Length: 161
Image (cartoon, rainbow, N blue to C red; front, side, top):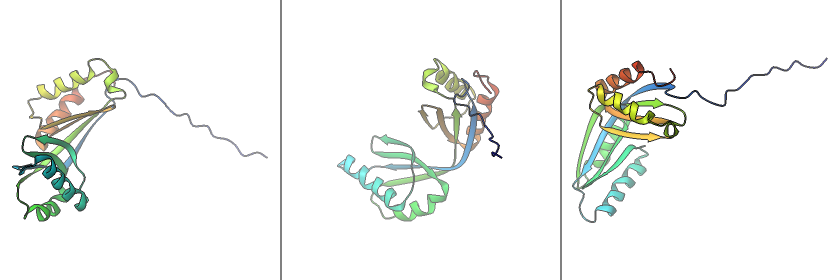
């Protein structure tokens, strides 16, 4: 007797529009500023310190005198220890969250990114960092503002739920 075969269908395409809004908390914003000259070399020094500490970065931005980025809050004590004796300004702000608005082929959907960002801005929340990928918009803010952003985007219909 031959064993029975079960067939499970796989969905290869996701529906157009927003498929999911995920709120992830537990981030801290780091500002490294007043790096001495040469600026580029000292940015690399700071980044090497993070690499040696094994700390992942999110939303890395180059600033006129240094760097800005997010890290997981669990890494804050290690960063404080690593940077306390370094010759540049270092500040850290906990309580940040990131909203991930997921939509397949987001960049191919004309106006979708602009519509999502319009809702985020209209929520009245202060957006601190913004990034996008082929399938998501990532918005960083203090936690309470991130909640407002997520709720505003969830309330709007963007072609999928």
